[in-house]
Length: 170
Image 1 (cartoon, one colour):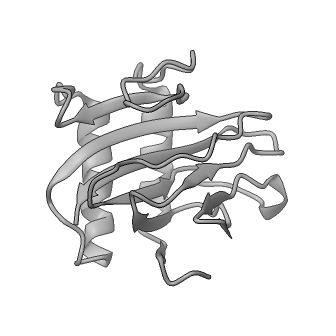
Image 2 (cartoon, one colour):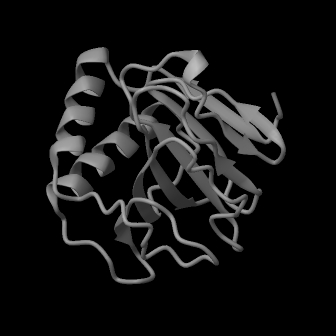
Image 3 (cartoon, one colour):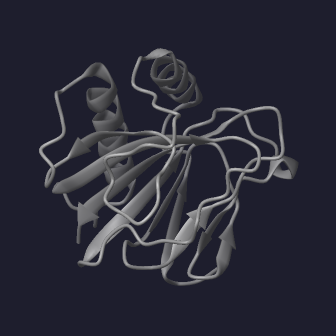
């Protein structure tokens, strides 16, 4: 594993992970039409729940729940900042590999949280960060410099690969 990436497993209790997953999946926050408020050269499946610079954020239940998850991640990664720039929630289906991209051109951290409570290794869905493969594993946070090239791989199993992507100040 590259030293440019920090991985923290078991962020939430199993019961809390199931609650967060079912709550977020059931909320009317999903936009799976390949449109996004995220400023990049391509479209990302999902929805931006908060973006400090674009003025997006209405303190919806989805935004509050994803912020609570970030607070739980921060409890295990004390070096993370309180200064959230963006919260994006997304899902990938078969054949929906990301283009390799960066989340920021400024000094910031990306925190990627794998939301699915059930996942089998053979379903794939890994994330590639700076050329290194990171296994998609339920309840995992992956932290790396937001300027590093990365992208998520499509799942090969019966479920969507769901995640929360946070961009925060260093």
